[in-house]
Image (cartoon, rainbow, N blue to C red; front, side, top):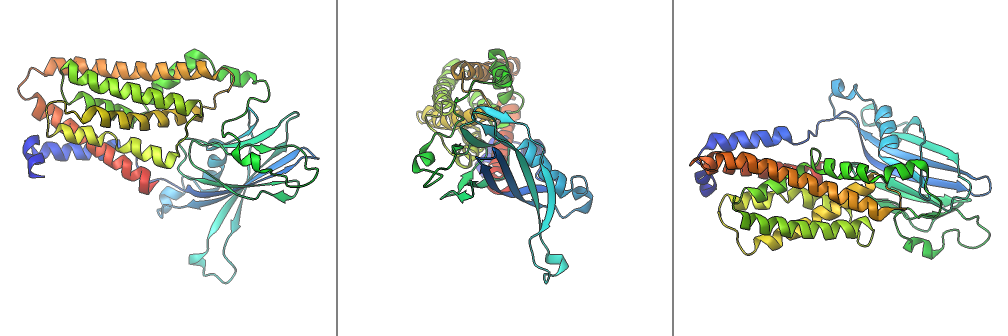
Length: 390
């Protein structure tokens, strides 16, 4: 710690950097928020109807002034419409939930201990020709979802746990004639939407190459705090082209491979593992920058390791936009191009600023090192937020 303070030269600068990290990091103080969700999906293959019932625990902050801004019913309605997406094959359904409050404790429970849950119900008609049902949890959702299914009055043998960014296993909508309505092969089905029906006009629109380039760009700038913090931390080690080239090259190759594997569903990692890894990634290069000025042999391999986490996380961001499986290679290519353009723009912008100031004798101690402390503070806060506070 003494060495850290001595290198930063200015304790007020460190305090300012850490304070800025807390200001830039997302606030955890919110109004009512859904903390746990259980889903029961029921299908009547004879009547061609379905019902998806959501039991949601909605927690208050404890501050009535804040909680009144978003009552539990509205928080639950927002979760049902914004965080969950019902699919029949490749087609997303736009459904308006009905919301009601229920008491989960008995009549003898003291008033101050009484707990309530919000029940949201989505109902509709199974589209003609639909083969599979899927449920998607938005990548930005903070709660995991537990789902059980029931077809023609017969429950599935196992439940599913869906983390943010994940699809459920496809649920067959074939009528039950005899035997097990959920055959074992269904559990091994791929988790991505099957292209069993022709894509809708809406799905084709989302596959526009230019739109996917724009979405890849905005995934980094301005929304990808974890990603651009990591890139800036790599940049702040040295302004010489050789160290920067080795780091950016290792990172680009690693995240490109992981993005392709994740986007095509060849390899899938749970968001609960990937997202904390992405959040903490900027802390390593930022802290190392405080103690070294030159590229060390171990740095490119570690940069590549974090690049793998970034690639799998970006693949989940891609799927959160509900891409059509038809034309998926073009979708992945456009999204990937947008990501690379954003990273290139970030490096160009940082270079223009650094070149103008790097000749100053005070640049490293007054600009570079406090920025590294700031980036490390942001990374550590977001890691704690992802792992324990969300």
